[in-house]
Image 1 (cartoon, helix red, strand yellow):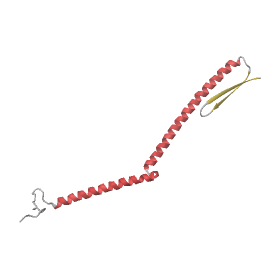
Image 2 (tube, rainbow, N blue to C red):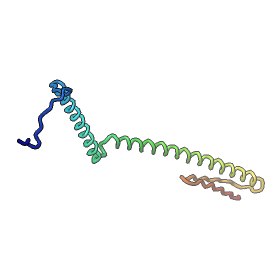
Image 3 (cartoon, rainbow, N blue to C red):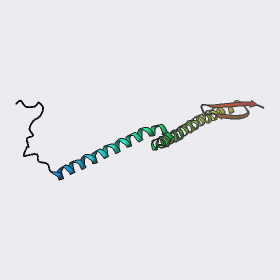
Image 4 (spheres, rainbow, N blue to C red):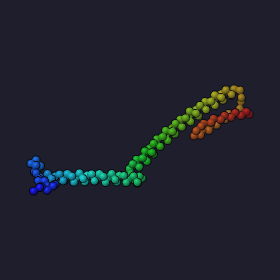
Length: 132
């Protein structure tokens, strides 16, 4: 009689015997790793969905604080630089006025009034000499 196709006799390998304790530990490990993977996957989805609510994330608060810090820092530095420039321009204008007043004092008798206008960008010294 011919043998049926696909049916083979089961040979038992002496190295691989069924051990119920080992099988229990194996499935416990598989289940625990699966739970860890699913938990991390859920956390990643939550993070991705939080980008729709950007205003409530800690990253947004950090960005706003950083912007405020940098703008405060640069505004104070620009203000200091602008004031220092205005001081030097004012001092040079006063020196020029004093120099021109001392040279014209000998030749012209009159009143000297000086006006210095300081704006945010330029300094304009104006000297007016009036004869009596």
